[in-house]
Amino acid sequence: MGTNIVVVTEGGPHIWAIANALADRFGKITVIVETPESKRALLTRRARKQGWLSVAGQLGTMILVRLGKRFFTRRADRIARESGLETAPRADQSILEVPSADSPEFLATIERLRPAVILLAGCRLLSRHTLAAMPCPVLNYHAGITPKYRGMNGGYWALATGDSENFGATVHLVDAGVDTGGVLHQVRGRPGPGDNIALYALRLAAISRDICIQGVEDALDGRLAPGKPDMPSKQWYHPTIWFYLWTGLTKGVW
Figure 1 (cartoon, rainbow, N blue to C red):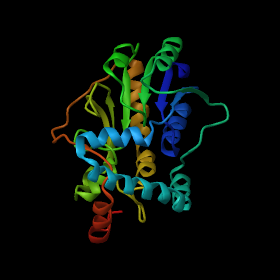
Figure 2: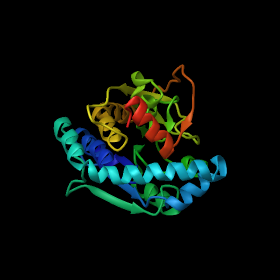
Figure 3: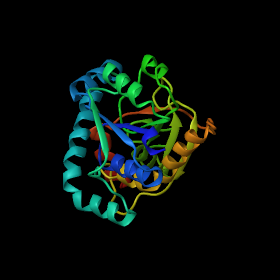
Figure 4: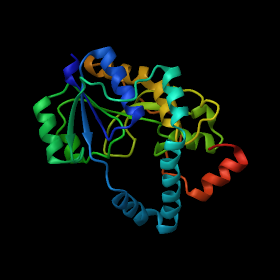
């Protein structure tokens, strides 16, 4: 059964924690790792929608988060240890690399593997053409409660907007939108003392392993039951550096 499960990702400790949990439950799985999109291409695309001032502010926060991940390594290790997370690929993990999850190479890999279920976890948006070629259900793990916190940093935005009861994660079906597919499972929790925007993804992974397993089980058993939560829908991005610092100083949400 395990070889019929494919996880598609850019990688990262929180994603490996979920992949390893799936391997514990189902046996051997295949992980397809795509090359991350260049930051220049990402920011240029955003600037067309939001303007360069906003994107420059987001870039400032992205740089701060990148530096913060190095600074908070010990804290991340503690979260992983206390939660029983394995945050690195195992030596026997089957890993395949493609330039993009929306590329001919990816389609060829999927055609060869013929998986029974695909779980996207931290990869780029799939085009309608790619989705139409998928031979099985495609699920997505999203570190936020959808549809209210679609896009980036769902856990942070729930806290920053005073909506801490929606600090959580979602497993949903994938459609052509950004985290707009039918919801399969959601889980809510709380950040730990000292958590911040560089650590929320790992904290959410710790409480989300079960819903990822459940979503994959549902797909394998042919009992997917997507729903649409009664809440507003909004796509979020990285906070600008000035908003991030202001919210941290005034609300204690970092």
